[in-house]
Image (cartoon, rainbow, N blue to C red; front, side, top):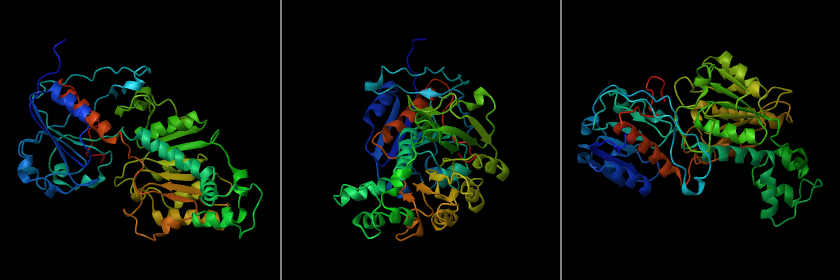
Length: 439
């Protein structure tokens, strides 16, 4: 009571490609004066080149915060030894709201339970990203049990906005509207001829044959989101915030998770939460589905989904999770012809079969197939110039940028700050990666 933060020692090393988040780093330095803190801004985005950091830099590191820059040999970082990893806390963590938002109400968390005999020197690696599928064969992952934490939870606000943005771009025919503006034309609501500048401009912007031949007619087919159904495949931080925004727009939400969520406690979000976002209690979905088998997945996909958000991590179980069979369910004749959104990993989808489902919608005049897709990920990345995915009908393709924002670095550092505090106070870490599950 009243004693302030416990003293801890060791060396916290940041190896990141963006400028130092000074407010967070300053707080850590002030709270733990005996903890050595070094910030190294290296390389470009998503740099994972260990050669950029001299070998002797790692020798006294006890906490590493990185996007992916690691020592080429774990032995170069001997102070991060092997030991039993702390378990994930069962309580959500909320960090202070930015100054302009402090008057907004925000839940107050219960403190995570104390662990016994806390070490004075913290030892863990914090990754400034959520997905760690690329790390699964690295010796630090396979040959040690050093705790690994990720930044899951920070992406919800930015990526959910990208999801809604792209869905609205498609449903409100924004490419057509933008084409009119580019050509400095006040678009007409009547149907122009196929050779008019309106039609030509939409063709230049990748619109489908159905929309280019009808000109402005698609604007009469706009349907708002009220009453539409959003299916969230993977109800983590991104899925929860997208569900929150979708529900605010009048959508019905159904969720799918690997494990069953049958109790109030099992539905709660147990990771990092950006204040004022998400679905802490898991109250938004009208129905929950779960399972790791095809039959369970197909039951979920058969719920007349208007929009499907793919937000599951890439593991061996989710690789190729959605292919021809699944797209046939989503695009069945007389169905909703689901708009598919993938912000997870390209390999979760069988890409050529997704393209085929988009082409089927166009070739059958909308009788079957998928009416559109928004894809921030692809297989491979970067996608080669001229790849068929770029020209797939009604597809929006962006280069894995949906999570980028000016707040990214600071939010990732705040997750680290929570865990430094938790370790100092003998509490459990949050956002611990489960090596068995792969995330």
